[in-house]
Length: 499
Image (cartoon, rainbow, N blue to C red; front, top):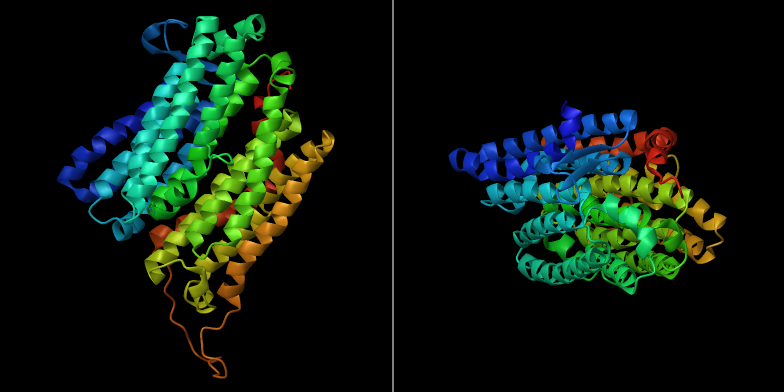
């Protein structure tokens, strides 16, 4: 029974929690955090039930008010949407657990607004994943976007300017998407994705359809910060609170990438994709490859850990774009697997940044010394493991997504894509080892003074922040060892039959 209602229960749980938090927070401020944790836990439960059901029995549809499409709005759980929704619910739950002390430290007196906006953001993102209607997807996209702008704006002193830039570029992206949907509707007479997929072979050569698809891809690319449409991302991630960034960075761009997957692989006619839209796929791939290199180079140039991680995210979006452009089973597997692994890696790394900010008052790379690994040994160990995974060394999770992408590039003789993957690995080594060198090797004492016997007091992050960090770090090893099971049992069933 629950599984049949899961497509609507997941987004509605988040939206209900968003409305409830201000009410309970007005009575007891601490209850706002508890409500967010319980809301995200309940949504995670529904998503796991839904994923189990889709793997066992296939696609699950829910029609709002019993109205069938194209008149009514359809919510859909299939292997792809269930996987992405479980990922975003899982990340949300662990971020909410982590966030209590970090939010109190970085944005005091704004806790209620933060938790309510976080639930609103997740309601929008979950709705984007669940809906089977292109216009309804736009509605949820705007819900998520408005909540995201507000979450960024309640960060540090420069956050408002960053949020405004995010708003401007996000509005442009949403406008492109809406115009594209309008052109598709004019040509097909429906907004339901399944109906459009059936009609697409009849109208795929229509100029309105081609332009509409290009606009949808362009708008989505802006939302997922695909190079060179990434200008909003570095400042937004840097100046938002650590917990907000740890929430938005792992899943916000992934849901936008999901929209690209959904439209290009499940709505567009396969023959159309390989002919008229072939050049569009190539452009996505080359922009992704350029973003991989550019984001990695810019990450090397940063002196602040959060900003370094922000530019790293630009590069990681590029990996997913390359996988999409390959339009092959190996590319599909690589992109989805990297989306999963990157969500865990980047969430862990932003947690580490938050731990440092809480205990050190900053996360400036030049001011890090080997005293850090002595005073915060668990945080330092978690950073090392996450950094190794980001570089892509086996057996950590980060290796396997890149491995499938490399195999896909070799299979189709895309040597530029393969070169970008290899060069980015070297660049990742440069910017992560720079931090690790200071963390483990740079002395904090004046030269010539022997402090080898000096005992440095531990000053680790509180358990509520440290335990989620360690869980994610260890999870990178678990995901690495379980990659074959994940690919075989979770990702392969979601690959479209024509691919």
